[in-house]
Length: 185
Image (cartoon, rainbow, N blue to C red; front, side, top):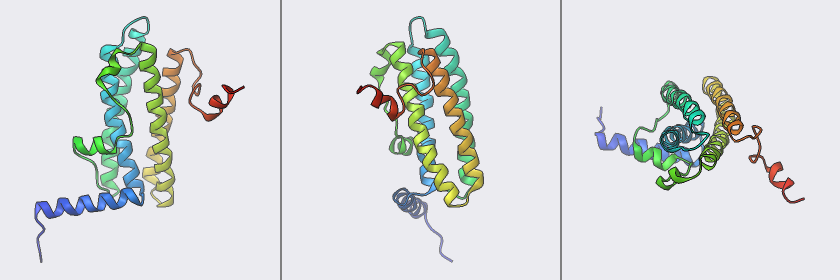
C-alpha cells in the first residue's frame, strides 16, 4: 500500500480539475458558479459601501439581503459538491481563476445606476453558467445538484427583477438579445 504525499494528492486534484474543466462536467461548471458567488459577495459589499444618491438606501437594504442569500448558497453549494464527490474550490486563487465576473476598485466611483446595472449583468452572467450546469447535471443524472441549481436560478431571476425595478426597468430590459435587435429599427 503506497501513501501519497500531500504534494502528490494536490497534484492529482489539480490534474482532475483541469480535465473536468476541459470536458466540461457539472462539477467543474458548478465551481465556476461557486467562484461567481464568491466574487458577487465582494461586489455587493463594494456597492453597498460606496453607493451614493437617492438610490443608496434602497440599494443598501437589498444588497444586505443578497449578501446573506449568496453566503448561504455559497456554503450550501460547496457542501453539495462534496456530497456529489466533487472537488471544491477552496482558495482565493481558484475563485479568481474560475470567476467569470469583472471587478475593479474604480467601479465604486460609478453612478448608483451604473453600479446597480452592473450587478444586474453579473446575475445574468451567473445564469449562463447555472443553465449550463443544470444541463450537465441532468445529463450526468445528478438530480440533487440539478434541483439546487434550478433554485439558484430562481434566486438570481428574483435579484435581477428587484435590481431592475430600482432602475425603473422590467426584469429583462437590456439583457435579452431581442432588446438589442429593437435598437436597430
